Length: 528
Ligand SMILES: NC(=O)C1=CN([C@@H]2O[C@H](COP(=O)(O)OP(=O)(O)OC[C@H]3O[C@@H](n4cnc5c(N)ncnc54)[C@H](O)[C@@H]3O)[C@@H](O)[C@H]2O)C=CC1
Ligand SMILES: O=C(O)CCC(=O)C(=O)O
Image (tube, rainbow, N blue to C red; front, side):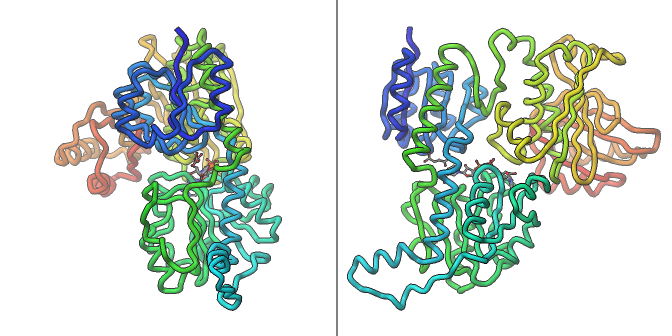
């Protein structure tokens, strides 16, 4: 039976043709996805779902998706898909990471210029027959400083175009390597410096726990008086109520927004303010970008449904059907090593080294390296996957080295990831036992044997009597159940590590209590 695909968003019809050409049945219902209930009722009949951002693929929709094997996002952000729910149900989620970047960067530049010259308001006034030549005094962008928050694919294109407009570009992005910044001709700065120096600020990060409200009442106060703010990335990066206040007080001179904390945005704190320009999430809406992403997503989905090949999946590594069963635990291990290191890394990464020893050195180590790099970058880049991770790392000037060796020591197979940042070098190693389950066996040179669960607590401490009891007591008193407790130390009385699996995430208050325990140097929650 031919696979069936539902297109539930306004994708270019080029996608329909690709599916048909490849023998896939396709239903094109561009309005359906916005109605969660209707989508949940219909999804059970399909093997593939192709979407843009209007379709909300919630847990409920996924629960009803009994045949669904792949969700294809014609675009970048997959925040309208419940990825953990899809993963749990074995559904692959794919995106098209680069197809609309230029178009979106051009929209950000268009918004900036519209804002600088008040074009939308001037247009409305002129067409209303008012000819208010004295009302619309603008500002030049030449010679002005543009602060780019998030200098990835889109941010770096915006930086390039802004330089063409003779602007000075500064960027805040913890993952931007200094060499890459130099190559782009942008000055890498900390957030406070960007806020203090920018005449225009443009946001190009994903929405994560770290970026939500990155422009808040507090950070807006640190901006220059007269600053103009552009958000063409994700609603929620800017506190809209705080921005409204800052515009009304005259501190912020204007804002241009394509994305809103609630979409579709039929009402919003920014609506109706002077010198606010709004568009309805049009960043990716050009013929060229929509053609790119629709063709790409249809090809990727058809490949998967017909041959099992996986490209640009955000929740599964790309491995061929034959390799899959043998490699799966090693891919998990590599991703876990990467994710472990990524969650502990807060400064720009300069280099990554992957060492493979024993059986695993004979496998497809490129895929394993890609899995480790994806795990490493995901805490900051969110939608990175095994296919895009190495390219993204290269673009950011991160050197990747792979070393294969014969078996050394007691373990039949061994993977070690070393991450070099501006400040330090950190290694973490693991193995897969004959039960097929990955274990961490070395952290920063300290031996231990730990299996990673969904919620972990990582503590570094001095090896002193009483610490283990105090930690257990603190968690117990907070009603936090410990699943596993793994310990290791450098030397007696020296540096030690505890890696504790807990049944649910820790509250900030309990974490603070752990941090205040005697001999604790660092306590960090990790999620896998
Ligand atoms: N308005 C629209 O229609 C569209 C919006 N987008 C959105 O634009 C955003 C950027 O997309 P891309 O450039 O493709 O993503 P990307 O992943 O290439 O770049 C994101 C950058 O943000 C940086 N970053 C992450 N956390 C940060 C933090 N806490 N502070 C500062 N920087 C941080 C990363 O290091 C990375 O360089 C995404 O949110 C995407 O969903 C993308 C396409 C169309
Ligand atoms: O498909 C769209 O119009 C939105 C694109 C977008 O936001 C993205 O690709 O992240």
